[in-house]
Structures are given as C-alpha cells and as structure tokens.
Image (tube, rainbow, N blue to C red; front, side):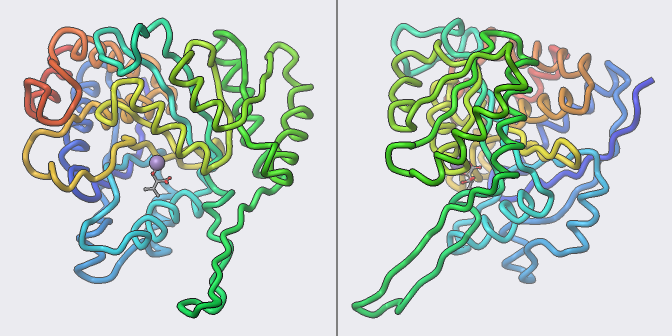
Length: 352
Ligand code: IPM
Ligand code: MN
C-alpha cells in the first residue's frame, strides 16, 4: 500500500485557485483509482492576504511547509500590489528558504497540440530545461548609489557559488542519464561576455562530466540557443543553465510546447520539500471567468506524483492529459478551448 503524502496547497492569486481546484479534482480521482493517499492542507498566501493584513510568508509558515512531502502552488501575482513584493516576499522566498535549487521545466509537445513552429511535431519537441533556482541575478545582490540624482547608478550582481553551480550541473547530468534518450547535456551560458560567471560554470561542467562518461556534452551561448530552440528544437535533450537565462528560455519552451496553458515546472530540493506549479501566472484578466486552461496546473500535479515516486498514478494522469488534448480541446488558449476550466478538469477525470 502506498504511503500517505502530506501536501501543502497554495492556490494563491488570480486564476491560481481555479486551476488548482482542477488539479485537486484529478488527484482525488486518482486516490479512488490507484489508492493514492493524500492529506491536503491549504495555505492562504498571496496578494489578497498581503493586502488584508500585510502577511507574506512568516517563519512559522515556512516551518510548516518544510514538514510537507510537497507543495502544490497555483500562482502568485496581484495587480494591486507593486511588482517585486509578492515575487520576492513569497515565491522567491520559498525558493530560497526551502533551498529549491533546481527549477525543472520539461518542454514536451503532446500529440494533437498546436505549436507555432512550422513543420515541427511531437517528434521534434521533447527536452528538459534544468534551471538553477537560488542564485545568479535572482540573489538580489546590488544596490543603488545616489538614487534619483543626476549621478545615480544601479548595480545588479550575479552571484554564482561553486557549490550552487555544481549541484545544479550534477542534477542535470543525473536527469540526462535517467531520461536515457539522446544522453546529450547542453550547457547554456554567455562565455564571450560573462567571463567570470560562465568560466565557473564551464569548469564545473567539465569536472562533473568526468563522473558521467555515458553523457555527451555541448555548449551554446544563450542568444544562439534561443534561435536553435525555434529552428531545431529536436537537437536538445537536457539543457542546464543559470537562473536568469533559464527564466527566459523556458518561456520560449512554454510557447513551443503549446503555451502557458499546459507548461508546468518543479522547484526541487532533492533532499527536502519540493514545490510544483504551472508556469502560467495569475492571469488577472481571466480570473473568475471559468476560461483559463487548468492543464498546466494538472500537469504540475502529474510532475509532483512522479517526483513522489507514485509512478502508477503519475502515468494514469499523464495518459488522461494526453487524451484530453488529443480528443477534446479545440485549443489550449484561455477562452478558446471549447470547454470551460471546470469542464476540462471533468474531462481529465473522465479518462482517469
Ligand atoms: C517564473 C516566473 C518568476 C521568475 C517570477 C514571477 C518571479 O517568471 O517562475 O519563471 O522570474 O522566476
Ligand atoms: Mn518566468
């Protein structure tokens, strides 16, 4: 019998609660079908909560989250809260404090899903981006000097620690080996300009490679890699990169796999509690209209199950998602699916 998992659910802002509700619907159906045991606890965090009482993420809440087996997140971001407050005070704080040092973002085009790439199909788009998730430009190092004056300056520094870089690269090699597809790991950097940062990444990459002789490696500058993701995505298997480049290239990844309606990611601490989220944001303009696509959130739940080692339930859910996109949905875009948010959730459940 499978173990009982304690899951923290953070519906969050905007369309977050709507899509998370559909993910939970699918998880409950899987509990019936596969004997999966989940104990869900909801946490009221996000823009509304912050506007009400100023709470972002307390140390107590962080401690409670650390006790969970996983965290299931909807979206963070509120139109009435200045940019940066919720992102830094909540999302990035969770990533940093829980040491979620990997942001794992699969880019897979499922059969039946439209891609904006001409002449490309599911056989061309199937790779994984391993994004460093706790350092780089996101570390928040820097500051202003003489802000607001004619002499002002702003410094934003990229922090890359040997330990942080190496553990990310090692995770990427492991992922590549485990996937067992092309066994090709591509390092994405900017060694012609970021001569310190990319130098550390490249040296660490070469050293860790010695432990994985079965993996072939390559290197691409981030600008060229953006181009190749569009021109020849079939060349990629696993890509490893820093936090900022990973943020940017995974938006390209999301759009070529069918858009933010389906893209999902895992914020992973292999030794601790990991967090799973749809990549699409809080989408304020679609909030409460029952038009947003819940498949990104449902796919995040699917990643969570696989991560927890619930292969059977994860497999059943993946097949259900595949059937919905192949047989039912007209489009993956909000308002164009041919079904409402809840109906898409119901379709997934019907295939479970
Ligand atoms: C993402 C998002 C976040 C990031 C924002 C909301 C801070 O864009 O998860 O990719 O930049 O990491
Ligand atoms: Mn992003």
